[in-house]
Length: 104
Image (cartoon, rainbow, N blue to C red; front, side, top):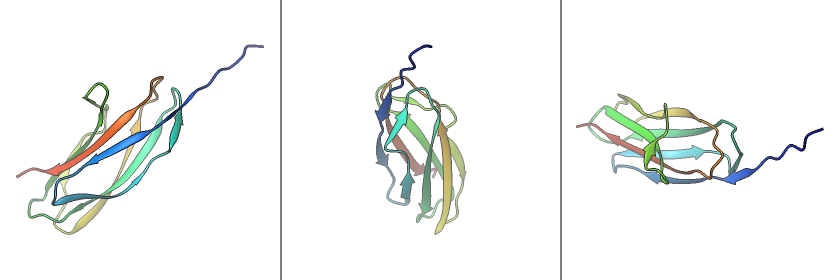
């Protein structure tokens, strides 16, 4: 029988938001198992005058965008939307940054 070795990593998330597009709630695990996918859920509220909003998740170590994490869509003024992003499993510690904003 083989020994199975698993590791878990703490997850650090930083939020970058524009004054008119706010992140109200982030739900993410405190730690994740190595190489297992996991989800980050967050709510976006548009308090500005522009309807075109965007968001993405960045790996702060490599400064690259996480695959399939970017979205661009119309979120009307005073509207709230929920975003669910699946983060691919990794064997390294992840430090992630959620960025949201609007398109003029």
